[in-house]
Image (cartoon, rainbow, N blue to C red; front, top):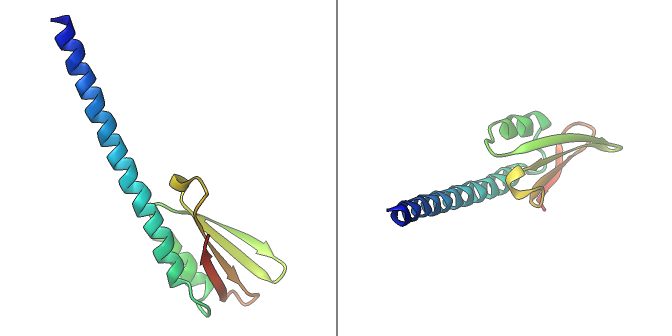
Length: 103
């Protein structure tokens, strides 16, 4: 009886681990897609306000603004990718996109 109970617990733990792996993989893929799709929207000539508005709609991204000598820069990234994959958007002094790239 004890061995059967242990076997059932092991099965439940295995099923939970597989479900967690599937869920994590799904969110990882969605976060990657979100970085790529949003970064493709930021073409030269787009205003910084528009970029910020679009980034605010993202569910799986965080973003930071950095001010540099010739304007500013926004880096959008997903914590699920541990900072490996990010979108860098550079702006001129008039807050217009100069370029954006997925790194």
